[in-house]
Length: 65
Image (cartoon, rainbow, N blue to C red; front, side, top):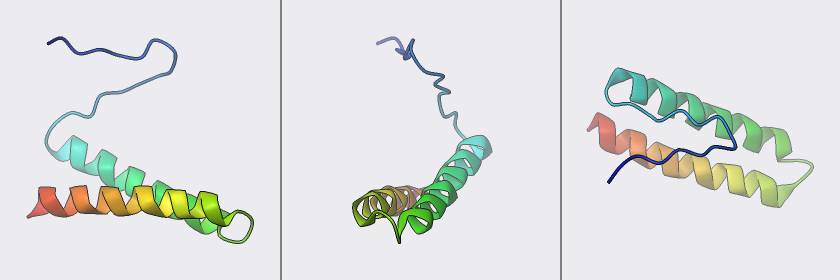
């Protein structure tokens, strides 16, 4: 099956190796920062970003071990 890319937005596929690990770590930190930014104004949005961060943390733990 061929890779399909979104034509609307700028999508960068995650490659393997060190580059993928760095990208996932960046996304994890980004979601944590967004969650803390929205903690006081929008609890549901903060919870959404925390959930995304937890999922990425699990992925990171699986890659490292």
